Image (tube, rainbow, N blue to C red; front, side, top):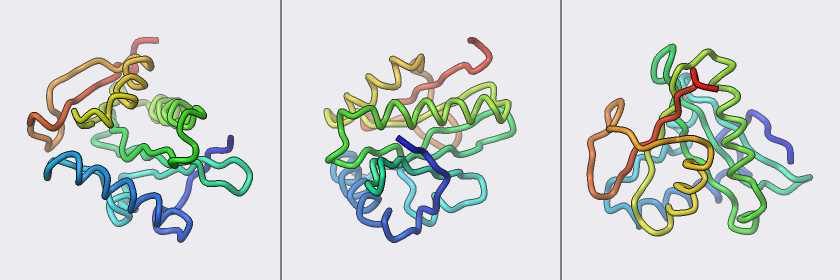
Length: 153
């Protein structure tokens, strides 16, 4: 699997990103905070895609909240790539990049719907623990928040 920095506006990303946004909006009743291509193109966001040969397996992003704090954004595996380790590979890549940037903390927001259970399991297995809402998020029954202390090895 190859993970490479990419453009969220690239034509090969459009359909998977649209599916991602549609699914989250449907499950989170107006509490989905996934970024669209415009948001993923912001200067504070780095976007990556995962590939196996010519097949797009998924994407993920890292948003800088401040010089010591990052946020995992928009992790998604393509439906045909689920169960192949795409999420774990992308999360490992994002954590490595956050450490390389010198972040002390990596946070994320995700949903509480059953479709989020595999992602939550992945985050917990990587060492993320529940935390309070951060940045501009407000708690709701549709959201949960996790953080990883990057100072701990």
